[in-house]
Amino acid sequence: MSRALEYLRASRASEIASLQRLLHTGEQILALSELIHVLQRERGASNIWLCSAGRLFGDELEIRAQEVQQRQQAAINVLPQAVAQPGYSRFCMLIAVALQALESLPALRQQVHGQKCSHAQAMDAFNHIIRTLLNLVFEAADTASEPEISRALIALFSFMQGKELAGQERATGSAGFAAGTFTPMQRQRIQVLIAAQEQSFATFSQFADASNLQRWQAMADAGSQIERLRRIACTDAHCGEDGVLHWFTLLSERLDHMKQIEDALCSTLMHCCERAIAASEQVELQQLAHQEEASFSLYVAGASWLDGQENTLSSSGLAPQLGRSVLSMIGEQAQRLQAQADELATMRAALDERKIIDQAKSWLMQQHGFSEQDAWQALRKSAMNQNKRMLDIAQAVLAVAATLKS
Image 1 (cartoon, rainbow, N blue to C red):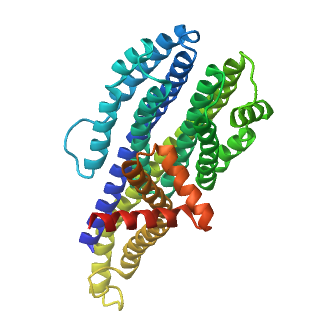
Image 2: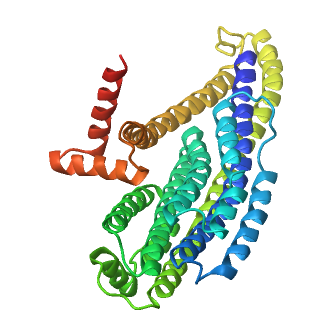
Image 3: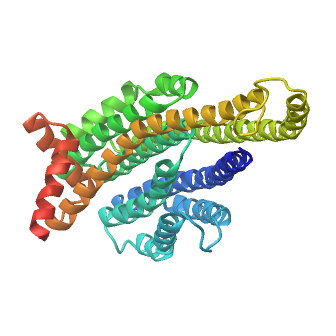
C-alpha cells in the first residue's frame, strides 16, 4: 500500500505541475490578447489609409505600429524557452509559425505606407498574422486537462475568435465607406462575418461562466446605429462622407467593450488555475498527513495484534481503518479523474468539430483558391441547402479529399 501512496502522490504532483504550466500559459494568452487587440487597430487604420488614397488616418499608422511593437515585445517576453519539453512539440511549432508571421510586419507596413498594396492584400496579411496568434490560444484550450479550466479556455478562445471576426467586419466596412461604395464581394463578406460572429458567440455562451456571460448579454446587441450602417453596407445605399469615421468609431467602441470582457475572461482563467493548484496542494498536504498516520497506525496495530485481538490486521498487514482510508483516497482520486475525463470528452467534441471544419476550409482554399471566408461561406451554404450540420458537410468534403489523394 505504501507504493500505492507513492504513485497517488506522483499523480497529484504531476497534476500540480500541469496546472502551474497552464497558469503560465494563461499569462501568455493575456499577452497575446493585448497584441491581437492592437494588431486589429493597426489593420483598421491601414485599411482606411489605403481606401481613402492616403487622405485619412496618416497620423494613426505610426501610433498603431508603435503600440504593436510594444505589445509584441511583451508577448515574446512571456513565451516559454525554446528548449525540448515533453508534450510541447506542437505548441513550439505554432509559436514558430506565429513569430515568422510577426516578422513580416515591417515589410507590410512599408507597403501600406507607400500604398504599394491593395486594402484586400493588407487585410489578408493582417488576418494571417492574427490567425497564427489565435492558434496558440486554441492549442491551450485543446490540451487543458481540468474541466473548469477547459471551459474557461474554450469560452475565451470562442470570444477572441468572435472579436476577431468583429474586427474584420470593422476593417471590411471601413474599406467600403472610405471608398464611398461597397463591392458585391464586400457586401457578401460583411454578411458572412456577422453570421460567423453569431456562431462564435453562441459557443462562448455555452461555456462561459455566469458573470462573463452576463457582461456579454448586456452588450450583445450591436445597437441601432451600427445596424443602420450595416444595412447601408449590405445594400450599398448612399452614405455621407463622414460614414467611414462614424462606422470606425462605433465599431471601435464595440471592440473596446469586447476587450474588457476578454480581459475578464483572462482573469477568470487565471483564477481557475490558481484555485485548482490550491486545491491540489491541499490534497497533497492531506496525503502527507495520511502517511504520517500510517507509520503510527502500524505500530499500534502490531501491539494490538500481539495482545491477541481479532480482526486488527488485514491480510496486507495494515490496520483495517488505515486500509479503508488509503483505499478511499485512491477511489476518490479515480472517481474525480473519471468525472473529469467524461466532462472533457464532451468539450473535446466541440473542439474536434472546429478542427474538422477548419481542415475542410483549408482543403477548399487549396483546391479552389477560396479565401478563408469564402470557404466558410461555401460550407455554410451547402449545409443550409442540404439541411445538414456544417460538421456533416465538412466531413463529406474531407472524405472527397481523401478519395482524391488515394
